[in-house]
Length: 342
Figure 1: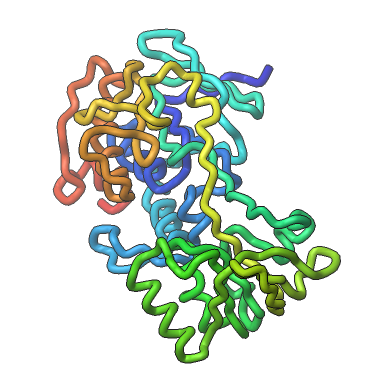
Figure 2: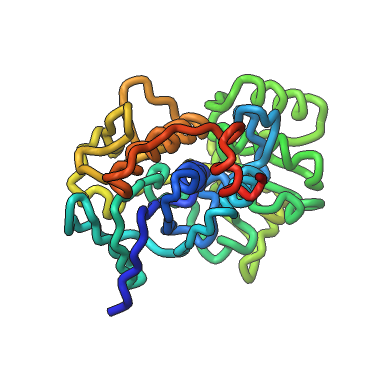
C-alpha cells in the first residue's frame, strides 16, 4: 500500500471553483491537496472551451477558459497546493470527528480534516454521434472539443449540432477555416438568438454553408476524413468535402462514485447548507455546479462565492480552538505577506 498523504483539506475537482477554493483556504493557513480526473487543471473551461471567451467574470471584461485557469494558477502560487491529476476519488471513509480517509483509483490514500467537492457535473464525456465507423477518425480528424483554434486554420470544416457550442465554434472558426459547413437536423436552433442571427448572416453572404439534415456516412482513410454524406429529411444525399469534423451533441455527465458517498442528493446534485455549503456529512462540502440549493445559479462567479464562504467553515474543522478573525487583503499586512506582496 502507498504511504498515506496527510493534509488539512482535500479538494476534488480542479476547475475554476476548486482552484479558487485553494486561494481562500490559503489565506486562512489551510493546506490543500487537489485531485482531478482530467490530466490537467482547469476543468471544463480548459478541457472543452480553452479558447472560448468568458464575459461574466467580475472585473474582467473578457477572458478565455484557458486564460482564466492560468490566472487562477498564478493567484494560488503562494500557497503551493499539490495536484494529483488523472485520478478519480473512489471512496471517502469517516475515521474521526470529522477526519476523513479518501482513496483514489491510483492507489493513493489521503487523511484530511475536510473534503471539498468541486467536481462540476461529475466526470464527463462527449456524446458520440450515431454515425457508423466514426471511431477510427476520432482524435485524428473528428474532435469533440477545440483545444487550439489554429489546428483548424485553412481546413474544410464540418460542424455538427444546433446548440451554443456548435454555433459558437462556427462563428469563431469561420474566419480562419477554408470553408465551414454547419449541419443540423432541423432549421431550428437551441443556441443564443444572437449567435443564430450571426450564423444566418454568414450563410446569406456566402461566407459559409448550412445543411439541414444528418451526417449519414464518412469518407477517408487512416483516420483522415475527406468527405461526409449529409442526408436530408426527404432522403436526398449531399456529399460535402471536409478535412475535419466537430460534432457537438452535448456531454454525458456521470456522477461516478460520488453517488455512493451517502450524501443527500437532488437529481444527481449535492444538497448543501447555503450558509456554509456543507453537505449532510459534517466536514464534507460541495461548491460549484455539483451542488444545489434554492436560488442556485450555475455561474463561475457563484462558485467563487461558495468557495469563500465554505473556507470560513472549513477553518473551524482545521483549527477548532482558534478564533477566526475576518480580514481584507487590501488592508491586512499578514494576508499580504502570505501573498508575497507586502
